[in-house]
Length: 88
Image (cartoon, rainbow, N blue to C red; front, side, top):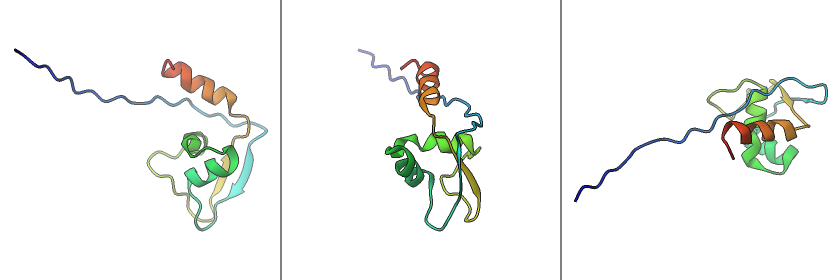
């Protein structure tokens, strides 16, 4: 009797988020983080990746106080691309 365990990691692929005329520009303030902003603008903390990708964040969700951030407002294409890349 042989039991085979396959160890693999599922990595989500995220699309590039391009600049759009409809992006909202904000200045990060004390206490801001990308999940908080995603909830504030999209009503869903799980969409933090859209703000992260648009602002070229790689390994943090915490902007620097005073940093300019761009919040995409039309996110339907980004979500569609996410689904295509990950075959959802």
